[in-house]
Length: 287
Length: 268
Ligand SMILES: Nc1ncnc2c1ncn2[C@@H]1O[C@H](COP(=O)(O)OP(=O)(O)OP(=O)(O)O)[C@@H](O)[C@H]1O
Ligand SMILES: [Mg+2]
Image 1: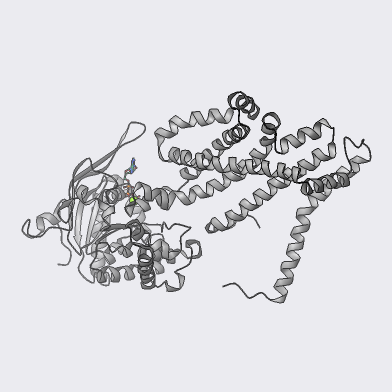
Image 2: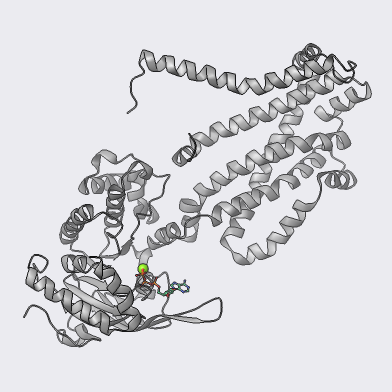
């Protein structure tokens, strides 16, 4: 059986090897986060969220919009703090690890978010610049990465001189240039046309494989989740794992398996609450 | 990868330049013609002959006394505008970054902005003995609020997403300012400077008339006492030109520094 039906919550922890044998790359343990709004109301973004990510895992998260997925990434980077619960990376609490500042974890956004006054090279070098790498060295690294994403002719171009796909490539190069151990992708390919997105996804996968990267991605496209992830987590709103699916290798090419996973995700999304089913299903119907 | 200039494109450029020249001179030529027309109907001490005015402009540029008066005033303008950047940028930046500072400083800056220029002139005459201090103070008080609000708006207009991006790479507060805010602050500083040059040029004479025994203000005062209308107008021309030259210089610098912004959109 290719697709595992696991208990909705906390599945991977229970199903894993004997406890404490392997320290997971990322451990999120009963995380909670609620925002108090200006009008005094409260928005619960993350509720009792628990899951582990093993080293070299490729985890795809699908879930309704407003489910707190981006907030979760902020917390993973140390930009926001949880109300309660814990996030550990390599067994260390995120507070000690100082998230983004450690350079071991970076994020790729949906839009390219390049600085318009910097050349492609300097944009790619930005993460290195922030970490204090000398100019010459970081430019060399940046140019190499631009070449790796197929932009060696555009090292001096300003973002306004690049196409959308080229900007997103620059964006990916920027994330890889800091040599992080973990990359968080927040709808990284959804602003692109499907042909460009397909090419970039497989390029990304190759790079992630070469660099022995661990990644966690948020996507609204089930096909993208199946193509990139080896595990798919279905989130409910507020953020919590309502279901987990293991994606067997080659599932994206195997019509039968892929269809089964799609159905399973749809079922769980519609079961995970009225809000959730409405928003995500409408997205899925467009596929 | 610009095309090599060919003969035809060179011609086209020449034609474009002369058209541009013609278009920029036309309004002034019309103004001059209107003036010359008026001289036919009014006594010379009200509407002096253009030639006379031009001759006086020539006199300003050939007499060291007068030229130095112009340079003194020009120096004061540049100094005040520069100082207002040094004072205004940190304040605007701090206001943009911190709500608390914004809440506290904004009313003060608004208050200062509300004081009429002439009131400042009178205040400084009572406060300070030094001429340069008086004039700088008035001009700086006039320019700083504009710089502050330009910089503030520039910082506030920065896309939240870029801020998130920079922080996601672990930027410290200082790096955030240096790598992300500073380029926008530079853009705002140019806007502020352009506004301030116009502002300062309109005010500096008032300050000099009341407070200073040197500069264009004094020259104008003398011309006024002699009912020397051509000289008054010659000085006026010199000052307006001074403003044009300064804005032109600022715009050129802006083009170089803010090259990434490109031209304005939505116009042919
Ligand atoms: N700084 C904040 N202050 C108050 N509320 C916030 C803040 N950031 C996020 N929220 C709220 O938290 C909830 C989760 O937001 P989040 O951006 O994480 O959603 P998401 O799952 O990423 O959605 P999408 O799929 O649309 O990107 C939303 O209801 C949002 O309004
Ligand atoms: Mg989001």
